[in-house]
Structure formats: C-alpha cells, structure tokens
Image (cartoon, rainbow, N blue to C red):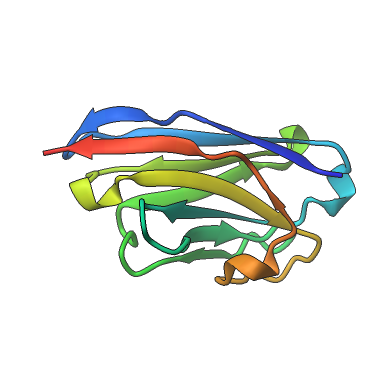
Amino acid sequence: QVQLVETGGGLVQAGDSLRLSCAASGRAFSILAMAWFRQAPGKEREFVAAMSRFAGIQSYADSVKGRVTISRDNAKNTLFLHMNSLKPEDTAVYYCATRASNTIERTASMYDFWGQGTQVTVSS
C-alpha cells in the first residue's frame, strides 16, 4: 500500500509563507492524483488543492486560490503545497491524500490513502 508522510508545518505569523511536503512510498504506480486537505478542530475535512500526475491539471479551493500553489515531483513521489500570505483562518491540520486515478476530486471520501497530517498554526 501507499504510505504518505507530511512535513513542513509549524507556527507562523499572518502574512508568512510555508511549504508543506508529502513524501509517498510503497506502490508508486498507485500514486496518481494527489491532493491536500485540511481540518480544523470541530470542522469537517476541507479540500485545499489537488493535482493530476499525467496531465498536470491543478485545482484549488476558492478560499486559497491565489495564495497557494500545488506541485509535485513524480520521480521522487513527493507532493508540495506552497502557501503564501497565510491567515489565521488557515490554521488546521493539513493532510496529504492520493487516489488510484488521475481524475481530480474534491471530496475526501474519493481518496484512498492519507498521511497523518502536519499542523499549521497562523497567529495574528
């Protein structure tokens, strides 16, 4: 199976930038579409961004569009999330997810594998 490990989270000030990384291992052929979700305490898991492997199609939630860039290194099976102009409302645990399809989905249940998450805290 695929194992995902997120890194790069931390405590930052509003307006700062962060780069999150998601390293994937295991069945690399199953790593097609990849996505980032986030979940704040008491909230449902929220879609942030996704990217296909072959077509390079990117998708962003309206709440982060213009401030976030998703990218991936297929050779290293690593997904990145570059976040700029961070806001306190961006505070959440950020999760990396993959699915065995190149089709991008915005629903968490459509993804097959998940990482343990990395905490991002943005102070005002």
